Length: 359
Image 1 (tube, one colour):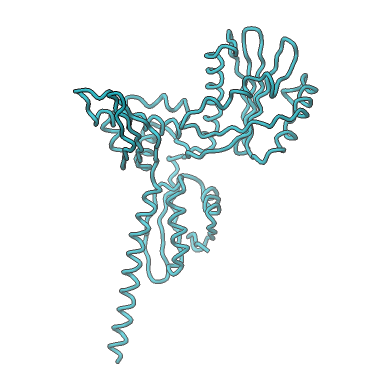
Image 2 (tube, rainbow, N blue to C red):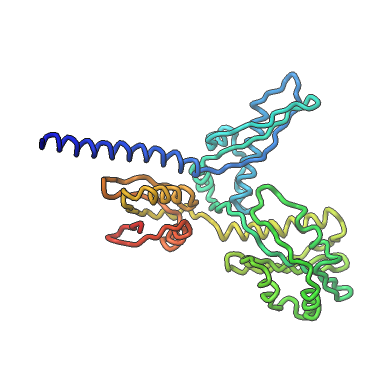
């Protein structure tokens, strides 16, 4: 009887570890898909002629996808450091790709390309180029574009303001900031006109607080006879950045001139947002997290969180038994930021014996 009891106990243990191992395999599949950069919506095309080579067309699509990805996760200054990436090196950073909506129109080949880049390889590539990438996090920002006509000392916020009318016409697929313009409130305009002389030092908080948006940009455009000066007060992630910029010999009525000013301003705003969300790959903070191995739902939540947090560069199971599972984590940030990231995922941790424990 004792032998039979021991047999059943051993059988239960084996069943537990077999099921647990299967669970780990399932987890691995789940978070590996999250550990990637995906670029969609790239249209590839080429004349369908005798020398048509589909692989060459796809290679050009890979280059366009890579360019969009780099534009999304690096600042304009850092992008200049990246030159002459061979197609062989680029392909080595691709996990998979999908071609859809293939069609031939008037002897022209068209298709849509979706490319999945390996996040670790992309981050390693940028680290070798001495570039700190940014978390590709989209954000809504409130923009007040205030046009000041210095000739007649008038302020335009809504009507007769080309920046208000056409600001959102230009948008790239890789831009991270979405701009919300203020609603047409005549009281706001009257308030600003009354503050004409002190518009640069005016406290806009009473206007901004009307909108349920944390981040804001105050853009004051001084239009003179043959030049433009802009003052930008950029408040992103509770960080204020002020920029003054002159555009000599330029007229905003000219289509190209207007387009260049908007492009320049948006590039500056995008760069500031990316700088606030940099991934410092030179920081490699090792951590150990322990969790009760019987809390299956919590284990799934933890693995999904670790797989989706951009600053977690690597994690794996250090050891496990019937009581606990221990994870080894490499984090590109400080412990306080890590705790904040985990809290956003509804995971509370506490420190015990130099180890983080999931509550």
